[in-house]
Picture 1 (tube, one colour):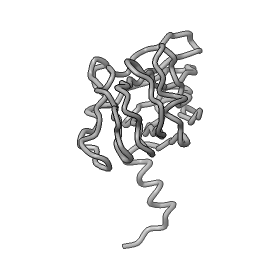
Picture 2 (cartoon, one colour; picture 1 turned 180 degrees about the horizontal axis):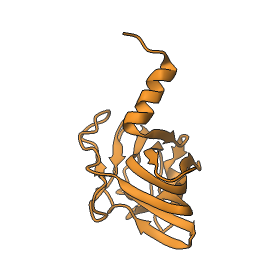
Picture 3 (cartoon, one colour; picture 1 turned 180 degrees about the vertical axis):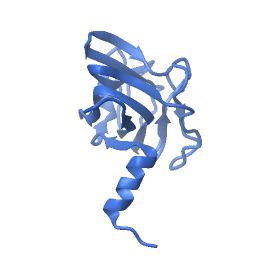
Length: 171
C-alpha cells in the first residue's frame, strides 16, 4: 500500500514524536570548551523528549571533545540542568556518527554510535522538560577539548504535554 508523503509524516509524528532539526553547525564554533552552553532548541511549555542526538555531517577533528545535553529556563529562571553525563571523546568521529542522549537517569552518559549510520542504542525512557508557562532551551556543553573542524546537526523528537507546548530550532 502506498501512502501520501504527508500521511507518512503525520504517522511518524504520532508514533515517534515531532522531529525538529537544527541546520548544519560548525564544530569549531559550537563544540568549544570553557563552559559555554550552545542552545540548540527553544522549549515552550511542557514537552516529553523521546530522542535527542547530534549527527556528524563532516568528520570531527582529532580532538578529545566530550558532549553533554542540558536544559535551561528563563521563565522561571533555572540555571543549566543536566539531561545526561558527557559522552566519551568524539575524536575523529566520522560522517554519520552520532552522539545519542539515552534518557533515564541524568547520570547516564550520552552514547557514541557503534559505527557511522548505525545507532545501536536508543533512549530507554523520555524526559519531561519544562512545565506550564515555562520558556527555556535544550543545549549542549562541550568539555575536555575544543573541536577544530567538522560539522554536525542536532535533532530532537518530542510530544507536547501542555496546551500550546512546542520545541523550535534556535540554530
